[in-house]
Amino acid sequence: MKIPVDDDFVVGDLNHKLFLKPLNGQSGLYQLWIDHEHCDDHETHTMLCVYVGKGPPDSRIASHIKDKWPNGIELYATFTPIMNRLSKYYEQLFLDTYQFILNKVENNGEERLYAVWDHERHSIGTHLNEVSSLSKMESFDDW
Image (cartoon, rainbow, N blue to C red; front, side, top):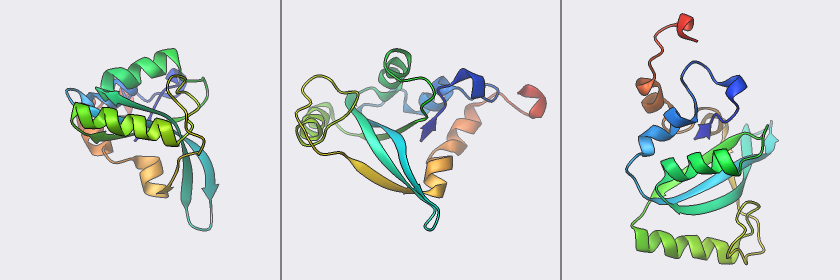
């Protein structure tokens, strides 16, 4: 999902808190991504993972936005619900294998983690309908 982080470009109440709300009460492995490269021929986006973490994604991602996320950089996030013990194992496996720009502790990996997303996943995400149903906006006047 693309998460709005720049208050100057937030439409109505569609801020990062609303986008993270569907993840409330869940726990697992989350990853933060940036748009690395765009291919016009295939309408795909190569994404670079810059952070991996475990735990409740809504509060952790909100904290990263406040404390770590650089201004002017669009934020994309993926989340996989996993039991706590397994999420710690997978987090450490990622940290031992890949280098993440924003992970400072226990990050011994050397490779970069990339993913290729189609245009729809990049621009709309996977739960925009769910987020829009949480919004209180009913018309353009509510912007």
